[in-house]
Image 1 (cartoon, rainbow, N blue to C red):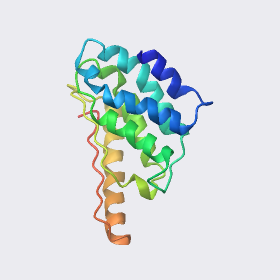
Image 2 (image 1 turned 30 degrees about the vertical axis):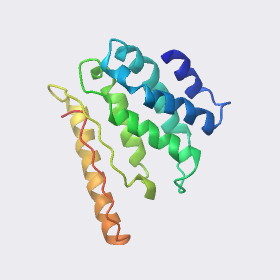
Image 3 (image 1 turned 180 degrees about the vertical axis):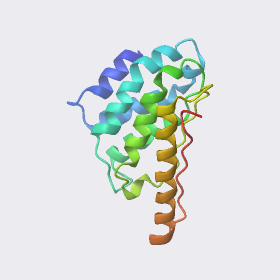
Image 4 (image 1 turned 135 degrees about the vertical axis):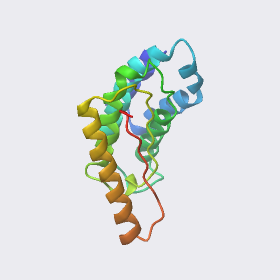
Length: 160
């Protein structure tokens, strides 16, 4: 089931509305992340989530299927429980979230929270996390100063 959903999300011949329907099924079946199938979920769907966030263009209109699809991917990633099964995907998720910030479109001013229970951050992830935190703080300042917008961006390092 997970493999079939991942193939659907990776299939570039499918439009955003079809992929959105698959993501809604994944969201509705989110309790799988608390079962024995969590490892299978991560194995198949993390690459599909990366593909969507890399290849589905950012939309300025919140009602488009592309915007809703990207937003739903972030919502599902946000709900992933931080345990040892998530550990091998830490840098992939970290890179995926950093990719959202560079270059930062106005619609990126949303809550992005990625949780990981890594025991010891390695030097590379620690430096990347510090850079991400600095970028997010600058985005907050720019959004609050230029747009008079109270939206905030919050990212917790995967290497914490």
